[in-house]
Image (cartoon, rainbow, N blue to C red; front, side, top):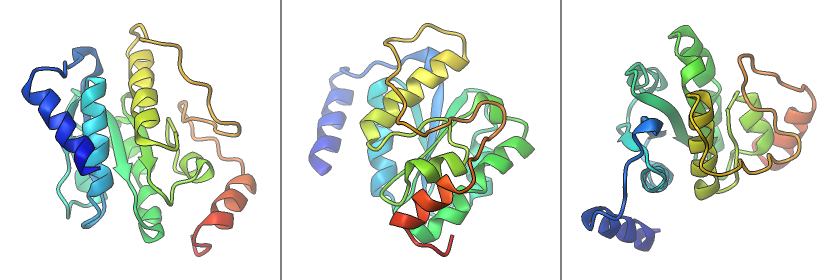
Length: 187
């Protein structure tokens, strides 16, 4: 990962990364000291064309959602490294709704504890198993939400994933089975 980040830094320094103003800004966050995934996602989103704003290590979910109040912010990405952070991820969608900004924020959570089922339970707009695929899906969702043209046809969604579309639709049973089968069953 460090090699990848050095390559992105070199691209940035040489002017090889161009910002796509139509995408706006993306807030990237993680929990506690688990910043490697956050930093990876920041690099990939920057390459995709976003202005990236990284949340600090000890910021609460409420403070991270507060960063999204800026009208330039169009996406929020949480990197999750441990299952004990999953309950906090479930708080993001309600907080975005309470702030009145849910419809303009494309929400994504990723990392090893995040399954397709958990992403759906958390009301994520996009889910992909890798940072690169997530960043591409986020950019496409932002372009679509903002009424712009997409660069490419969106990738097919993994079977069983229902993205956020004004109301989080959770299929009970399937999510619980999918999540508990491969993760901490206390959630």
